[in-house]
Image (cartoon, rainbow, N blue to C red):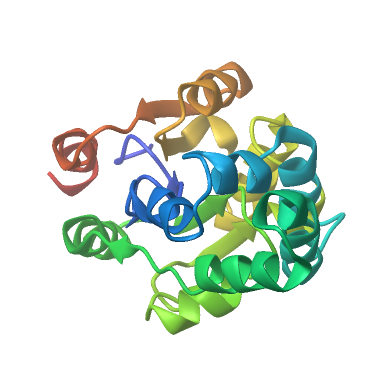
Length: 205
């Protein structure tokens, strides 16, 4: 008989565990005399980003293509490469409250990181000291499909050693939550630490 409501926690990275400065890319636009939104609009163009987070492009190839696409706006290939280098040096901040709570949850059930990420994710996790913070990492660039594809949730549950119907999935993107629920998981649309604490209470009581 089950004594816990869930057998595993599947958790998103950016927007939950890790937070980017919302003005970081805009600051670079200004420094390069570009209209606001130029860098983000180029880097996160749907088709290009999808290729990066499904592993069809490596992180290096993705950033190279971003630089190429920025060349006309920057006035030269050199300036575009310098902009992409400056962008690549940006680092976000880890939410210590979320990390601590996930560490506590790991004492009860496996916690798996599930991120639509590029091939840089693993080295970035190591650089910010989170390479051992999860029982497993599902980087979509390594599996060839990205959220909200159901296969991502199935793979994450598999790596947790749990049935998807017995997994708690936490993500800040509403569409990912909708897809996870449709696949059978319990989803929490993350907006602040209080939601995670409420969900965690079910596992820690």
